[in-house]
Length: 389
Image 1 (cartoon, rainbow, N blue to C red):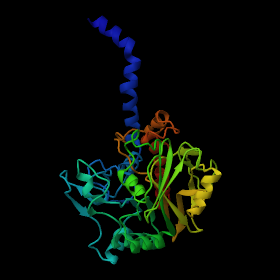
Image 2: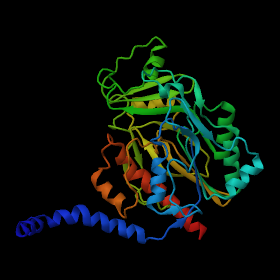
Image 3: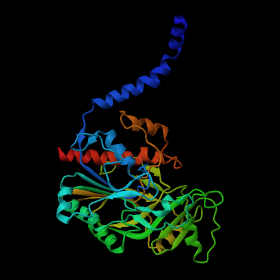
């Protein structure tokens, strides 16, 4: 029996080494790296359920690179943020933000931080908890920018902190007044347009096209008779424009393009497909463009963009230096990550996943995370940590 066991082990030891030895080595290497202090405040108001999909990727990146708060503990996805905290029961939860604090108190809180990260402010609505969802969001439970958020941004700007904001930090259900305040503090202007690519516009083939989008389009007396890939642009006034593949645009999906050699120093793929929601913003001249969107419009599509008041290219990731700090804006729902990313406590794991998830595969959300988003925010966090030293 012993001889048979030895024979089996001799044949399968390479597999055992791969399955057990490599992960143990990777974990061991990760534990040897020293932790690095970085005080990060994450704000996520769109947390109806405990998957924390809008900020889980941010926390994963912090923990993988061993950035820790002053306590020395790893960041916790279910505790270390401001916003909505789900209770596990329908439409129940608690809200935690700075709305009860004075501007002076908010400024003191911001002084303690290195990075302020607005992951998502859309919020939580009644429809989130319905088994049979309709095209209306329903009554808002919590969400949108409030005045304390504006004070956070103002304080971060005055104190020379790094502030990062993403898509839907200023759109619905934020009021026009607070949106204007956000734009003034950030030095950007929303055109009112958001967009998204769909692989199939035929609702019989693709049931994931939002019902509210179809209903809103039909309100103007038009019929939804599209098929094949398409791009949908929605304006805050209710206007909807549908771009057809081959006629209005030629790229299979919108792409995010980053110059191979850029003065910003960010190491990112030159071209990454991005099929999710994005907004189109105008930026002040002191902003630097890290990456930009390209939908590959035809001549006819380019004319349609101009008639909508939109440029040929849209900013995707931008930043500017101000008062000794930086302000970043990501014009897309970059942080949204529905699937579990696994444990961050293994050295070299992002490189492994980049090998598995091909850059060109736009159908898998994790491909975008590993190839673009995680490298981007990790480089930003590392840059902030270096500047502290």
